[in-house]
Length: 197
Ligand code: TMP
Image 1: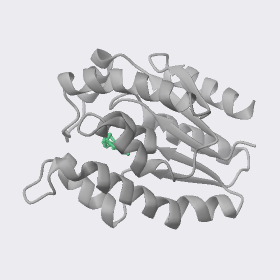
Image 2: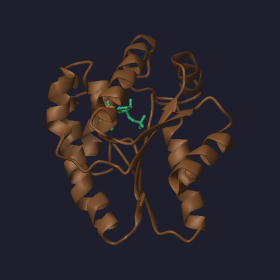
Image 3: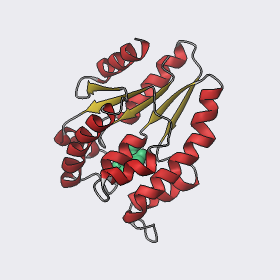
Image 4: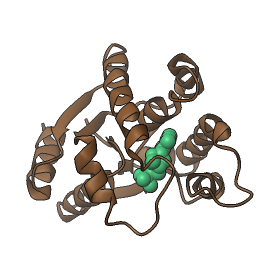
């Protein structure tokens, strides 16, 4: 039975919107749902945000593969695993797929995988496929910009996600592709249909 769901995609692909919609609809059907995200709002996640926002005195970007893995271990032990144990549904906005796609731009994919391979695998991962130009158009409306929200980086990360999806499917992970350029309601319906199936 599907209970642990990760929503993935480029910056601007709509992961936050679709995670929130899924949580709302599952809740309205009487499920106990825990909505969560990475980077987390916990101590390590807050440090990561300072790097993503290029704040003064933030850790160097080179630390991100390890910081994200540490944040994930914290996330699992404090939030995800206890919720699953209690029988709740867990929907996370991003998970280790983001690390594989984004941090493999700075260290080899195998090394990123080495930092993440012990973590619980989601029952289903939803990959929202949206072209980079559309992601950038959506990001353009936001107030706070982060280091990956830039065309040359997103072009590379987009190709990286394709590679990562193939890599993880080769390991038997269940990843569904959804066309994230469709209207929000349609995307949400498709995600729900997959999860209920
Ligand atoms: P957000 O835009 O969903 O808040 O995510 C913050 C940024 O962090 C986004 O650019 C993706 C990036 N990220 C990684 O580089 N590695 C990771 O493991 C995670 C979870 C996010």
